[in-house]
Image (cartoon, rainbow, N blue to C red; front, side, top):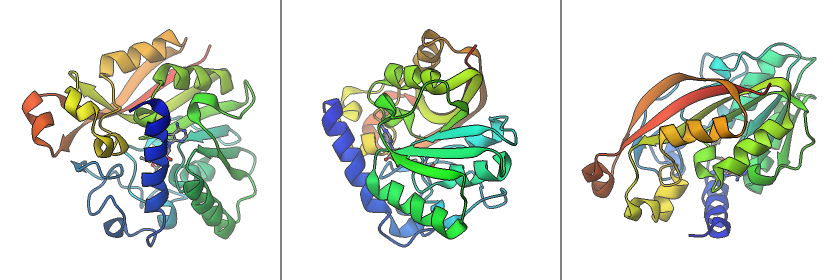
Length: 256
Ligand SMILES: C[S@@+](CC[C@H](N)C(=O)[O-])C[C@H]1O[C@@H](n2cnc3c(N)ncnc32)[C@H](O)[C@@H]1O
């Protein structure tokens, strides 16, 4: 698939999952497991329910970590969430940045943005906003955020170099990112790479952990650290026979 087709598939799959009743993961195409759309993965669910700001209406069980946990967010911070979905991490971040900060969620799937806006309207936050846009070409000014977070999204972005180049562009000097994402140990078999459902399911677009960290470093980030690493069990004969491991990591890095 070329990058344009990949994005169309992602928009279609993620657009269709916000239509069923929110908070009911069983009724979405993620049916009954935690993780990305249609992945056939089993991850130990990261429990958001006790986090301040958590809104079950924004939680479609699509994450692979809790990036806000390790993001060192401070009251008054300007925060950007990439691939914000229905707003799950944005509302948790809002509880930390408070009245004087601001939270922006960016997502390229218009149905997701509409769902996030609907949630935000109900919650009544004046300093949370959602915009439709592509991470590879963000419609946002340079040097404007203290913190960038993202949860289980960059694996879906075809050009990860572009994504991290955009992140460093929009961060203020001294700002940082904290991202939870899917990576691999070993190279995915070609058959898995070409599988549309596994791509939307956050597997096929994942790169090797070493490469992921190298891309971050190449874009100029400093003090890169991996805070958490969890093995993900994925159903699928080809992948399992290949011996390639799939992991969720939460990683941060600073712009100097
Ligand atoms: C697995 S979901 C995660 C949603 C959210 N972060 C959460 O944890 O609930 C991936 C989201 O990333 C969005 N996405 C994927 N590729 C994107 C891109 N290139 N630009 C903007 N959003 C993207 C999808 O539309 C989808 O809402």
